[in-house]
Length: 342
Image 1 (cartoon, rainbow, N blue to C red):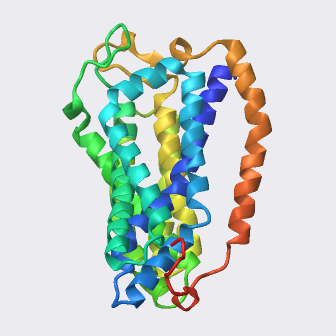
Image 2: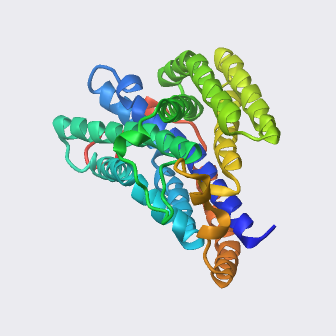
């Protein structure tokens, strides 16, 4: 394996970690109006309970996106430049959504006013729904390919990105994150909120499995390799386990199944790409590949040493955070909202 291959695989792992961990954050944000629905003041306490399930970890989960984007920029500058130019508007919307979500979560408890908190809840919803859909649209378009010329310039428009395959990719990530979030809430709460989250996860599991299966089969048939059928099989088994475990209200097993399904889906997308990083639908000769977009060997060596030192630190910190905040929460544990961060 060359360093170029190593960093392609590393970027895939970074995005796998981001989608698995940030996926349930998005799910909790999207479900806030539904599972947080109740008469006041219990409604606000419910919503704060949901936000407290992700409160200690959501910002650390975003580190994987920053690291993945930074690694792409440093290791494959040509890939980063063309992809971010082509997806300028969708990525701009994702960025705005993430900023709005950060501000809404951090500032929600700063003013003791129901209207203020309601608008913050809207911001959390927007910052969760928009990225959950657009990440799937973006990665599906990367696999499908884009109109790229000999100079590696994107020659299409915004509506080139809204094709049926990409929209199915957006539906897949949306449903996967919703189900992932519902199961995470079931793992982290007790009482009526947990019961409602389990019921919702069961209702979401069947359409999630069906849409994800359709997306993976389309990917395999149109762009896959013979050996990537194994990834499809693993994801299919995970989908079946998800449905069965969600029905049995075994949220731990179901959450593990959605994690495996997300890992399989992202792995599938990167596997069918290799050795390309961004195919051209104009001419295969214009494809962006690992070789023609990579940085110098010296740059990759420095990056490898830095990653070898920092990655264990990040993993250890996150593992410690999840361990410390591992206990379930209930509405009875949520104090009055005045002066509290969430």
